[in-house]
Length: 349
Image (tube, rainbow, N blue to C red; front, side, top):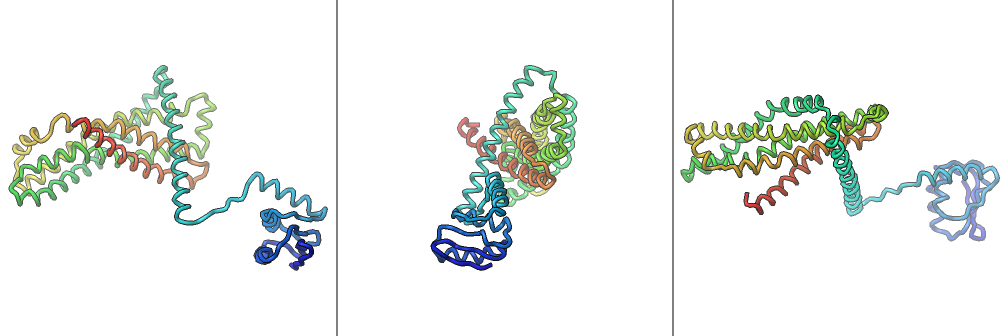
């Protein structure tokens, strides 16, 4: 490539390809010009044309070059060049905007659930009872072994660590209060919610995501069936049934774990533990945990379904959606738990 400057016009000669972009970029930054003459160029590629169009200078071209430049201009209008900026504040702002967009789409999804849920209530024949029962078995009943084990160990760990301090003050019996209140009010519901967020939300996202990639959702619509009736509402209803029951199981398992450790480490007998349990907890303690169940169940089911519908029609997107689904579900559950704590504090529960 050869360059000449004449009357504020840059004349270009030779081969004008992507390899010469750096050279001309350095040159035009040093000179003042209004026009770029390409008419004497031997070869011209699209990358070089894109660069010259971005300079916003007048281009003098030959008849042979007109058609190529016209095609490049049309494609630039349809697919504008994205300039990726970098920097800490830019990344923070970009991520914030992306999260706000995702929140907006999620609120739209909740609106669809509300509207189509009313339609389902007015027409109960659309309820898929078999799918609900199957989902209760898969996401509820099959989770019992791992949930019972984790809850038992959590109760045992709380009692064990509490025993170290309680022994120093001769307050062994208060291990009952420590275990029962913490498990029933906070840890039981939270363990269930986090376990299901990782187990059920990911499963929902994967199922719906694969159906979207294979275009099965389009087939369902073609058959005249509402996809929400098949893919969303059975999951929400099954979670609303399963979560309260699993929380009760987690409460019982956690208390039993604490009871075992209290017997082994503090010498608190089974009889003394149960008698103290009646004084340590009340119906308010139990309700403080069980009232969180509907909110946790709804969040897990809706976020899992939402991310499934947001999956793009490629395999790579499924893994990304599953990851986002699990993270967002756990985050939403913890935020909801914090809100419940504040509300219960105001209500004196």
